[in-house]
Image (tube, rainbow, N blue to C red):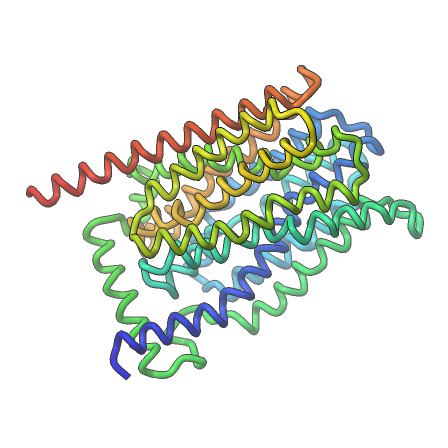
Amino acid sequence: MDQERALQSAVGKAVRRLMPFLILCYIICFLDRVNVGFAALAMNEDLGFTPAVFGTGAGIFFIGYILFEVPSNLALHRFGARIWIARIMISWGLVSMAMALVSGVTSFYLLRLLLGVAEAGFFPGIILYLTYWFPARERARVVAMFMAAVPLATVFGGPLSGALLELDGFLGIKGWQWMFLIEGLPAVLLGLITLRFLTDRPEQASWLTVAEREALTARLAAEADVTRETGYHQLSHAFIRPRVLMLGLIYFFLCSGLYGIAFWMPQVIQTFGLSPLKIGFLTAIPYVFAAALMVIWGRRSDRVGERIWHTALPLALAGIAFIWSAVSGPLLPTMIALTLVTIGIYAALGAFWSLPTAILTGLGAAAGLALVNSIGNLGGLIAPAVIGVLRQETGDFSAALFFLAGSLLTGAALTLIFGYAQRRRDRLAEAA
């Protein structure tokens, strides 16, 4: 078997073995992060939470998440993905189950904060882990496959959460409490499985042949050498290089839209007077389309080798669709607009995450990917709180949807600026 065939065989085996499990883990991860949006359909009334209180609590998750992102990713780089990912999953599952104990504003804020601390490092850790296994030309596709877990979490989680809310009063337990208890348990179980299932690096994979291990390891090592020359590999580079910080800013605006719709879509749909179960099924519809189209868009990005327009165009689509959703009126056009929003946001993710992985390696990647994710997830902290305030002050969601539109359109514009600067940098390097 020649080296190229061995490389392709190794990549194919890695996709088949690792990606289904990682996708399943991220489905559970994202569901546990955003199921508070479904809990709010009943929890807010039971506990007397105002829209501003709920928005603050939804966003406070990201304070703990952001503070511990970089240390967590450095720990993963030091101890290996198998041990560290298992630790993250078990701890966040336990905290998610404990959300059933929320009894007021203080406990709500505290447990959301602890959930962020527990989950910190999972997403950038998996993105880093994918760079250990997949060459650069495969990354938009595999990142899109992995991140398809996010819309899938809502496709399955929306109806599930709606159904669990219907258990209200069973055994004297509120429906939203059942939801937290049942949806938090799989993370603990999957964390225990992770300890036995994941392989840290290709050179340790007994399920690859010797030729496959050598071909994949050689390709990844060669790419890392190139990145050391043209990108950033030192720990300090992650915190001071303008390109890394610019990518974090782009991701901030992307995440503002992503978490704005994730936390608040159920309540937007609730304004049409539907039951929790119907809301759950309607919420799933946009994510069905997003899950399929984000993978197709990621494959296209890999095939043509283009990242900037494959990030900017979907963000622009989502921003324009948010504007439409703010003025659409009846349920059907509103659902069409929200579907286009969801497709645009998630289609951008695979191509976007190919940008930082192309300029970061080694410790620089461990810290830099976590930093980009941390800056981005400030959008998850700020956007839900802003939406809550706008909803409370105006009495409807129109102003909030315009705010989210502006965030995504800004992200699209910054992506194009980043691409222009990158092309100019490349031209100067060639001229030198």
